Length: 174
Image (tube, rainbow, N blue to C red; front, side, top):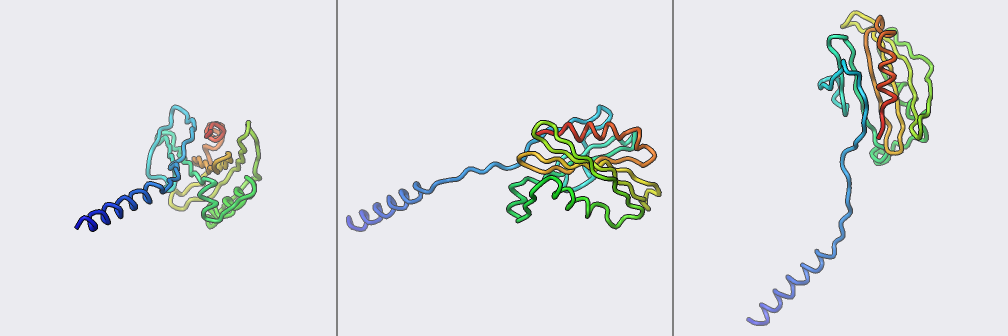
């Protein structure tokens, strides 16, 4: 009986030692960034299910959202982009590609500190709204992620809101 108890105690001690030697690797979840919005806009939901933040002003009829693609997650999915240009071209080729009267302007690249930006104007005809829609489509590259910053209004309000949309885009930091 003593041998059986000794065997069980030895076995339990061995299991305890083996499991105690397992090393753990720490992972961080989520991604933090900041972005500034005009005071007439507020956070919202329901515009895009992939968005990290969504914003709007129903009174002014302007909307937007930001989608984050972390470089780590892209690498896990074997989607390795060598540059902002490559990421942007992959994105813009698919963005609203099947919409009527889609027009995409030439991209404008800019670097602020160590953050890379590209912006382009996109317009298309929305059958449901029976109006032309204007997007300031921006892509931002930081060390950790690519961000798609999409702000839109009707095309007739482009000149009214484009500067604010650009301020939103260029305010992004992580």
